[in-house]
Length: 129
Image (spheres, rainbow, N blue to C red):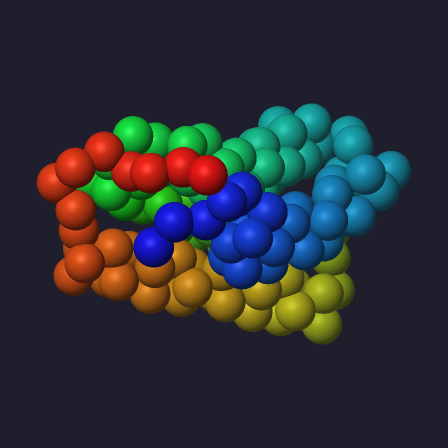
């Protein structure tokens, strides 16, 4: 499976939605005072999409799979930070559930793509248009 651009990858598109959600929580006045939480949460959300993009330009499928794995782990990190944000009162239970669901959706999409690539892995360098 070759994508002409990372923007075509549905998991990247959904990761972008997650990043926007996280950004809306972390720019609130009360969360700005907890700079470490806001920075770590934003960084993890940005890492989801950044690793998909970087992996799409990898030379081989195994390398792409590695980057997708990093992205999937970043989605898990976002979920963990969301729990901390909920516990600290930075987001409502409804906001938490929506963002957690989005992070889980992205992770499942990445897991599916990883499975597909492992099953159909090529040993030759990836071809780009």
